[in-house]
Image 1 (tube, protein in one colour):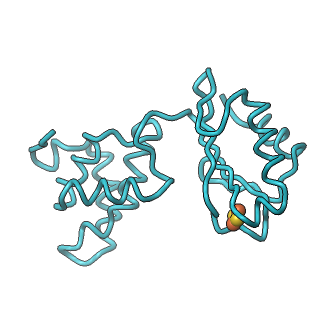
Image 2: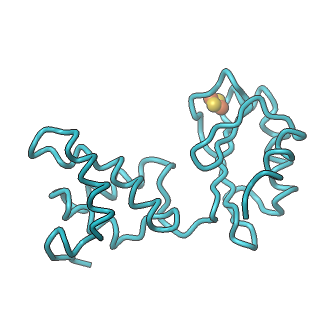
Length: 167
Ligand code: FES
């Protein structure tokens, strides 16, 4: 899809204000440097994922090729390109977490949520995913729920944390 239009037509005033706050942090003419925080803003505004027309609109807004926006959005696991649950659980199974019991953490998550890795619960409340190291190896095994880290997990801790997730 080829999008055209003025900046005002691409996003609401409220969203433009949020995007512009980030764009203003970079030198004039370097708007594309704000692509990552802008993708976060737009993902939050789009029920947790990035439809292609939203990425296309951002490319126009930042004055960069759409392919460059897709490259960023597809590189990082923090961006989703298809619909997801209301809450995202990213469980790390990389080396430190694996050596400290991530297998049991995954088992407990799958049991409690009644999904496998990569799936979303039937009520659409949670998407469970396996991710590579999230840089919190000292707290292994760990998982991330939305933007929050939960560390030194045990199956019992997983239960308590899941009880606290809003539906
Ligand atoms: S290996 Fe899991 S956070 Fe680093």
